[in-house]
Amino acid sequence: MIPYGRQNLSEDDIRSVVDVLRSDWLTQGPTVARFEAAIAKYVGSQYAVAVSSGTAALHLGCRALGLKRGGMLWTSPNTFVASANCAFYCNGDVSFVDIGKDTFNISPTALEKKLIEAKQRGQLPDILVPVHFAGQPCDMKEIFALAKEYDCKIVEDASHAIGAEYHDSKIGSCQYSELTTFSFHPVKLMTTGEGGAITTNDKGIYDKLMMLRSHGIIRDPDRMNGTSEGDWYYQQLDLGYNYRITDIQAALGISQLSRLDQFLKKRQTLVRRYHNKLSHLPVKLPIVRDARTSAWHLYVIRVDEKKTGKTRGEVFAALRKSGVGVNVHYIPVHTHPYYAKKGFQKGDYPVSEKYYEEAISIPIFYDMTEDEQDRVIRALEQAL
Ligand SMILES: *Cc1c(COP(=O)(O)O)cnc(C)c1O
Image: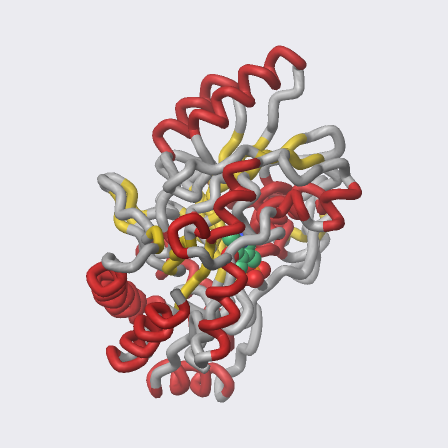
């Protein structure tokens, strides 16, 4: 089976992990700080905090921005459940904004409409979570302008988008947000096994993230209530977590990050071939947008039943049967049973639901050979 995504580990990646295993520090050592400095430098942010997962990054981001009971987070339904769940972890609430028909990202038009209505009801969101779906940057200038007008904070979920570019900056530079989160799960663009990161330019947010990552504990005497009782002394100031990443993982992260541009370049080559070789088929291909460079975490085609006479399900099954490990991203979050219990219904976000009925993610990963890609293309021709 050709998978839809797969990590690539080099001998150098392995060696850097083994070096840490032979060192004094398996966790809370210098390699985590080195990884954080490398992330901040790569994306162009002031600060980076590495954590145990992309989900932990979203949770800490919401906590650092002060989301609590009575608070509200909005994201788009076309995402992994974690982009929304993070609000519930903080006892906050969730609502959604539908996606654009061709961008698959949060629609600024739908966002503005919903903000106007929410203002009239006096229920404006505290946090917006634009998800750079498939690696394609959201319309951040428009979203940022609306966030300023309606006094919301922005957490970019860039789990799909490390290395993506929007106008003159990299995603993660936080030019249009308070903070950005990343995931380093093996299906993502680069990996640490499990892992994630948050970037920000705000020292206050950074300090909060660092504290919450490790139980809400601080060791800096200047930040203590009262005076330090000695070198052993620390204080817990808030309720935090153990969301630390290990030095073992961070070593892999540093090595993978140094190869990221190479990973992205290969994805672009694969995308160009898909674009050329699939253009004659009756499927809709992902669009390439101005003033941005996608990280191409996913390559999503859409099956138009009216044109092909076949449902997405039929095409999906035929592809799997011929050894192509296709997948579907995403089941609209609001249609999951957990969200139905919260009162969401099918029909609430029709663009996301229509998109979901047509979408298939076809394989794209660094190791993919031209031969494998041609097999995918032939399988798709037959399936249609
Ligand atoms: C993968 C992913 C996450 C969660 O990341 P983990 O590292 O698996 O916790 C969150 N949001 C999106 C959009 C993702 O794709």
